[in-house]
Amino acid sequence: MPIEDYKKYFEALELSPDSQLSEVRNSYLHLKSLYSNDSIVTSAIAYELSEEKRHDIVEQVEEAYTKLIDFFENKGSDPAGSKKPSFVVGEELKQYMSGMTSFSGELLREIREKLGVNLKDVAVFTKIRKQYFEDIEREKFSSLPAEVYLKGYIMEYARYLSLDPEKVANDYIGRYRSAMKDKGKQD
Image 1 (cartoon, rainbow, N blue to C red):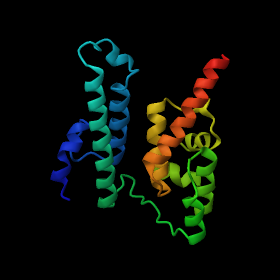
Image 2 (spheres, rainbow, N blue to C red):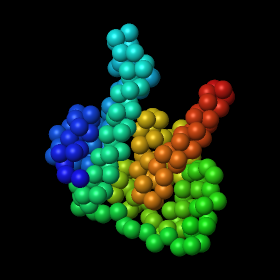
Image 3 (spheres, one colour):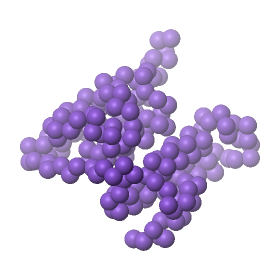
Image 4 (cartoon, helix red, strand yellow):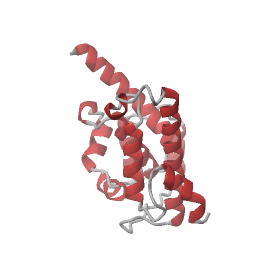
């Protein structure tokens, strides 16, 4: 697809069509955080911007981000010039992965290790600090960033490992919310 077909997605993220992947990622995280339910910035004008409208905006931002990630992957470009390695997933690993019902930090680590992937490589490719991936795998929830950023990081990690980003993120965020809720009860 030519870049003109992606223009509306760049506009949804308030970017120009010549933006780099890192700018797309940063704008996505910023806008998602801005229009989330618990944003301090929009709380002052909450009466002007209904929850339904904010939800619609977040959905548009999500769609734009997904489409632009596909655009950059299909274009084969990365701002740093690095490309995601292609993995040869053997039958044993396919069988192992087919039995998964829910993704946890430990399971992500196991998959990464079975693929022979180094966390440093993931960090370099995604432009996300290695420490976050270590904390995700260890489920050190108190050390992780805000949920909106965490979801983006997990989705990038899942994409790198050739997993379903939505499924992985939803499973992990469910575990995160549960742990944070339990932590709140203990305090």
